Length: 299
Image (cartoon, rainbow, N blue to C red; front, side, top):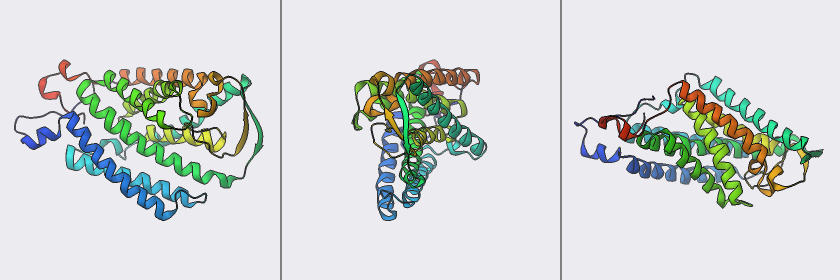
């Protein structure tokens, strides 16, 4: 079982309050809101919304601001080492996540193409990649910090891995309902495929590098290479596709994330990751199944 932060009796009242999971989450939201304000201003200054290479710089700056906000939150509020961004193993885990994202989404497209739902009708210049690279960096870093490093981890340290997995996956799906062309089916697909898979890969390593790499590479491969809508947003990619067939096969206007092939492949991979996490002893029991001094926020 992964260890959790304990709460000794000598801890001050303020720290006891701050370290109650729901309070910790509220404070974390405040840190992320502040990061969002700063990041938005920086992105506007460097032209992150343009079609040029500045979009990549803007995306990188936004990601850096959120990472800094997480480090400050962890050090000032939780008062612990920032293990989620530990440098040991960072490069291989990040590269592994990137590779998995590319291969996994390519497999999804391969199945859809094999069944007649995807065909390439043209190509576009490499210059179209700048915006999707910037977007992928932002989504890969910020969403993993907020959904996995904060929401999942804090709830897990309180209610255990299984409940945290269910709640974080459901929240991830619900958040996508506000996207263009979103449907209940799309939200459900995002929850069971990406919500479970990304939480599971975080559980395996207990660091964010692999999850961020997988998330960013998935989005980039989807939009930047195959020219498929990313979570409902139209993007320009190197390939110009013709997408046809039932929404269950292609995902419709929301994109291939809402397709049955994506749900099946990603859910299967997520289950495999959960089995690996269990084998490594990464699951956390709920507070009522642990000693009362272990019922705090997970380290």
